[in-house]
Length: 597
Image (cartoon, rainbow, N blue to C red; front, side, top):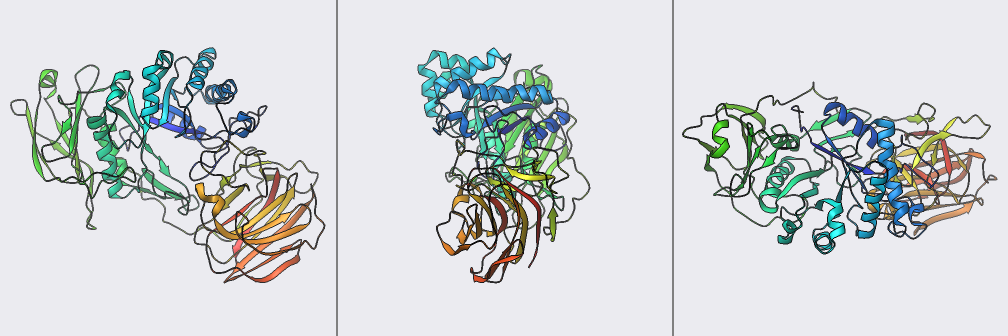
């Protein structure tokens, strides 16, 4: 708290073994009889957040589900008892292994909800001592959930918060009739330049002023994924080079701080029209009061239309101008207006440095009135609180290219963890013992054995990417073993990942367990350039070494030091390297090497 963004809620994905925008996050239960609470990074994030702010609220939401939940139906609501037990085990695991209490739980990200499932979930939570965990529904649009709550008294008694995504700062008139807190439970999702900062400042205020929403949750926290994946730099800050350690603290951090460093959960908004509203020449203001009615903060934003457009939804046109605003302190606010301090952020768009979260100093309160000159594209906080600061560390490490050559034998990771720099795009690749009496110790193993209940579109072939979207001439070498299924793939110049991973172009070598190979220009296998028989015998549970080299417009490949093909024209493209399986089945990789060709 009182250092940077000072976030008050951390919302995390409950991994479901499926692609959910920039990659797959592993489930704590790959199968019905499997439980592991050390997979993925969300546990680490929650633990670290609690260390820094013990009062931060935790909120879990599934984007996808492992396939066994629906017994092959692609429907997590088909067997609501199974799904509710699955979610409950995640909450219990958070408590057992990390002493984390999950304050809020959602239903299914941006998908239809099931009233029957919500009721089953409440029963399961209560039966397992999780009666204080509140349910947020439905992390999608307003109308269906509002109608369901208004027409179903049992559902109304169960849902604690109504959450909508990207509401455009508005909520329907009948939302207030539910009597439920209204949240923008996912918002922002905008490039974190100064326009992104303006977007965040505007929606934090106007979600309440226009839509009576008392929480705004920004997607995403930190843009720590490859720039070639969807929505690059859409976090509050960016850190997409783990090999260099470079990071960038951007303006959205400080626009969030204008609210979060001056308030705490439990503070309340003054009613619209009595401490919150629009400024005379556009812009908005909100007033927060602490429970003791001794502290207050007025947050003001005057963001222009041009410089505060979020990615979604479209922002209606409006004009704004510099202005002088007068704030009359009445009621209990009169007693709070002794020492009043002003903080300011002004964004610039002409290559001049912006002023970010600056303490201007004390300002006068004359006859219970505060007058403030407000400039366009600025945000202000007026407060009688103390302790805020613009935290900073020493300069971050400089940017750097992915280090080549790169090698990993996967022996130095904990079991069930993920190898560094790999970004799973379909399936889940974890570190495990090979289980074979060979020189191979720990390996990278594909762990999803049936198609998941997807959030967007998963490829038919599990694949994990590594590197940069700008690689052209590289050689990829890896040992592989096929435990079961159809075979493995090795790829270069993969053009993109995310929800369109199934359709990405690339140079893709497929090695079939039956002794054949194919070379194609896309992951989906629609366009094949060459096929042939492998020059070595291949089958299950035997180790082999494959090398794929791309240079200029051609590709070469070998298996066990024997040529598969040479100088096959593949065109000129660029992209990530990747390894994967030809089906949802267990395959192993070891002694992975990438070098320039």
